[in-house]
Image (cartoon, rainbow, N blue to C red; front, side, top):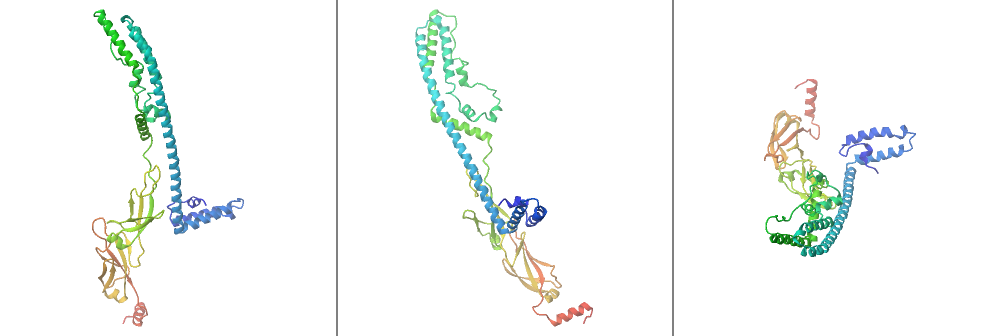
Length: 420
């Protein structure tokens, strides 16, 4: 059966009057007698009748709403499982890229070491006047090694952008494609020393040039600094987390779970804890606080549904006053019925009334009718101000079990204007 609310075209929180009005309106429009040319009219009319029968019954409607909430929860769990599976696949892809980058880095280091040996031999035989040629060769070899190791020295942020695409905040960062320090080194933009000046003796110039060439050769022979794999993994994961936090919202909270708790007047006055049954055979206990009355909603944060990849939801507990033949709750006041006889209503009398704190004696004034009430202050429910509401005794005139001839004659004479 489809959703009965959508069949009748009402909201989920619609009351009985709205549901009945919607059913009457829909039933007239889809009745088979008015749609004889439509072969599906009978099925639609029957489906609408089933939907109305379900929603007009409070117990059946409550069971359906609970089952619908559980179905929605299951669907959310499935969606969360799909998202978790995709996240694991992305993590595996990241680790594969990390291993590939590590292998390329090792290959670039081996190539750099192999190319540095002939440069070292040439530098050992070089003369001062060949300084400019050797320096040009060193710069050319350094540029080649930097080009070969560019992929191996890729930063975690660059790797994340290459795998998942450029993040929105990267375009708005404002660096304008500014090269990093490693790229400046690879392109020769940073100088490691200065060429000696032309003044001075030839011997000192030759020694200085020879020392500069040896230093360049040693720098070429030294392998590039290798970043350990665990450190690269940590940097990569950190960059990935920064990207996720910048482009994805905070994990949404699981749906709130709404339940009802039956409380008595004594529970509200004495603030006694009551048990609440939850789905999946769970049970919790809640304690009403001062200022809570019938219909008050308590929110228990972080004690609701647990769904993968989502923040734990809350529990909304609605306090419902249990039926009591003696009392009725209206706000913080407690109402009760005070039955009195006809003569007490006319002449006045002292009468006893039952309260949550025991029996109390009150005075009924002469000539009191059923439209009057008597208030006993401070015998109601605790309110937010540290005080209590009132006990409201509603007067009800009650006749005797058997007719009294004297009273009957008196009323007859009063009706016809004959007074004794």
